[in-house]
Image (cartoon, rainbow, N blue to C red; front, side, top):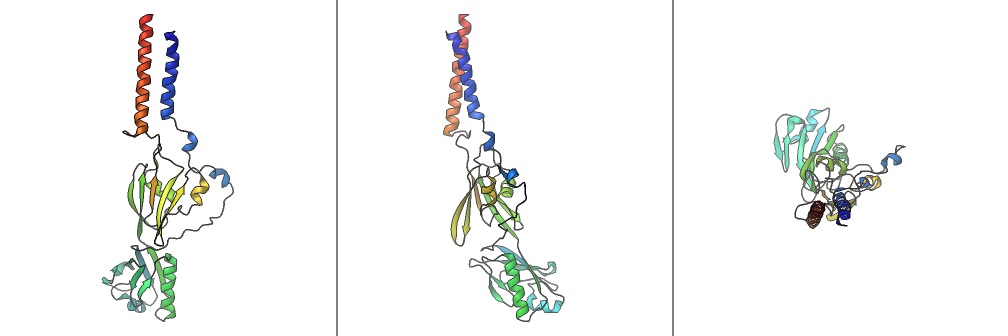
Length: 273
């Protein structure tokens, strides 16, 4: 009779090991349904726009056919002539044709001739248009060409990813998929259906949950395009095998007990033969 227990104990051991290691395939596949949904290309409804925030560093350049006109705004800070210098919070390499401005806590920069300009909450295109229009309308430079860009911004990725940490990105366009990719992607034990994004907007802290398994949740989320200082948190699965965790402990104990029982039964059966 004891010999008949052996097959059952082996089945129990195999079940314990399988239940502790198997992960549903559907819980690992990103952007499910995207292939069918985008068989016919769709217009991107939410265009990307990065709004300038306090502590951003802006690079602003001005060009004109008349170099002498640019000298009014140069003051050893803006493009147009030789030499380098500083103006307020600006740090400039004039020969490179770019002046750098740090946005203060109130969203302002100090710009030559025009003084204090409020740029907080504006896109780089809106800032360029504002400066160019003033130059033209106030008779400084009729053919002014102004270009503004955010030099870099940082995003922090925490939790169950392969390379967590804070990284600084060049340029202005970064998606949540790119940010997770730069962090080495999620581990196999990470939750993919409720990735948390923490963001500061207009002096308030807001959160978004993104389901990476659902393409609509990803592409339609306000958090699809990253903003400066965003924090992404990836939760570990409750059954993650982390040494010292409750799940890990019970799985380890269970597997050990089953293994011992199987060994004992096998020994008894062998001795009774």
